[in-house]
Length: 144
Image (cartoon, rainbow, N blue to C red; front, top):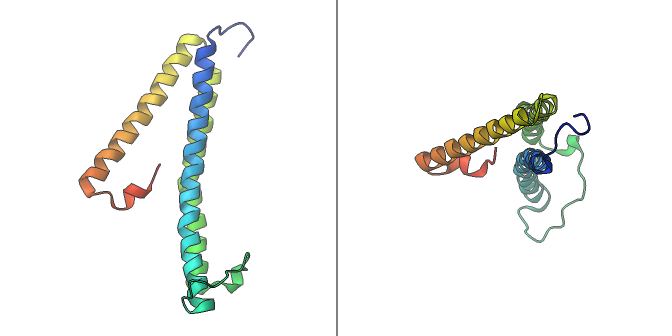
């Protein structure tokens, strides 16, 4: 954006907020996926090392080779899922910002922001509808 061509600081504040929202959405989804695996790992360690003992002190690090074959497969699957699910979110985030920066003028930027916010509102409404139709289930845990 050339200096002096866009005089509305509120638009740029909104754009920065939108960018932060998109980043947080990506991080939240990544954290959910990691938490899912960590819970399985803790369960494995408790069962494998301590026969389910709740007071067992778990190791701070564990090698991939020390995992059960089932957990190794789950970790590999998680990595594939993270790539397939998070890559589109990252691409969407990057392309939306690129489009805003490439817009010809203030009005085009405002229209793009409206489009992105409206699309997200529709996505969240569809998610809410699906959760109510199916009673929450697996969709209740997903934020993206």
